Length: 176
Image 1 (cartoon, rainbow, N blue to C red):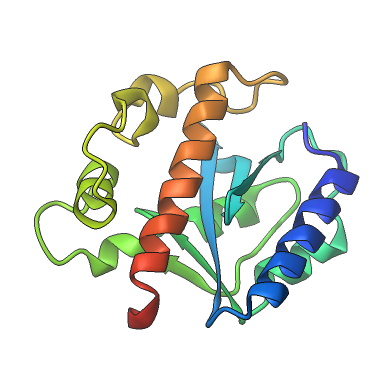
Image 2 (image 1 turned 90 degrees about the vertical axis):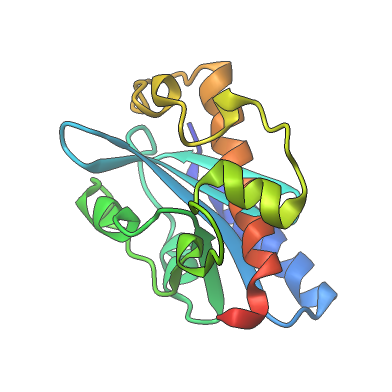
């Protein structure tokens, strides 16, 4: 479970690193896992640099205002792959979150099927991402993301897909 204090710390640390780097845009990998029966977001995964945060929305008692402001900040580009429904899922969550600048990286695929595996291989040069770390692994995708304690495989999946989304977004940063 992500405490409001941990969420605040992650956001402040990410902002601090970004400001020191003087980059040309604040890009954050964003992935949402949901409960299929309700289409409600169960987890929110964020990644900036090498710092990833998995927020168990279904078990987090409250969301700090700094996260709400962060998600709505138009200067932050939140990137993911096949994420067209993520904003709706976050709005359906018990915390009613919304994203201001959500970018679907699968819209930028220029060749082949824009899957996580293909985009990872094409733009990052990683051909050996284990199957349990990509979005085509339905056992992980359909697992219980509302569980109080996520499995090691769920946590690995959550971090890897958020990190890969970030890295692919950084490769495309000049296009959006």
